[in-house]
Length: 262
Image 1 (cartoon, rainbow, N blue to C red):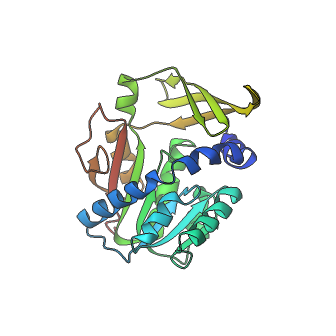
Image 2 (cartoon, rainbow, N blue to C red):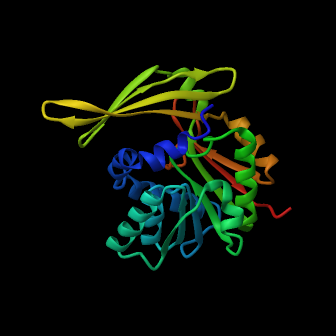
């Protein structure tokens, strides 16, 4: 596994990935409303303190701030954090949405003096490293979450992926095109992908970068085990932000755990 692929994609070539985050900014407004419904179902009300772990350009943190939550977004990419601050100012929530450059593996140190009511981790951004690192990240998140606070994970669902696996794909946003070659390693449950980026040039496209994308995908029972190993207590899983039941025919899994304070 290439341990540096996250820096390669999110920092060295962050301008390419940012195009896709920008495209999804408007969609995050509906997702934030879904998060608010989920928060209420688990006893978290507007005004709560929310940590957006691996926040990208702040899509969800900004829309949650507009709904009355106090949000802090952290991301490894200085470029993304700078853009998140711009967007927060544009949407009038700079006083309620704070953004920090911080590696998700260092939240315990970087946010040692903070306590949150909710941690959110969106858009399949857990599983970038190995399973022990995932558990360490979750333990650190628990350290900065109040007793009774919750963790909400939004991730791709391995069971759906196995059933509906496609070995390749293509996406085009603005002037950027990405060709994705996918491999699901059944021995490790890791997606071993290669993303090749092209930029529009005249009547065609010119090559920009080839970047590996290697991440762990989880079944529900594996997530329960992972979170419980890190000290969280499993509460509920959903298939989407309508709070429907999870299904192998839904590509998304919304997972909720609680810091029971043990």
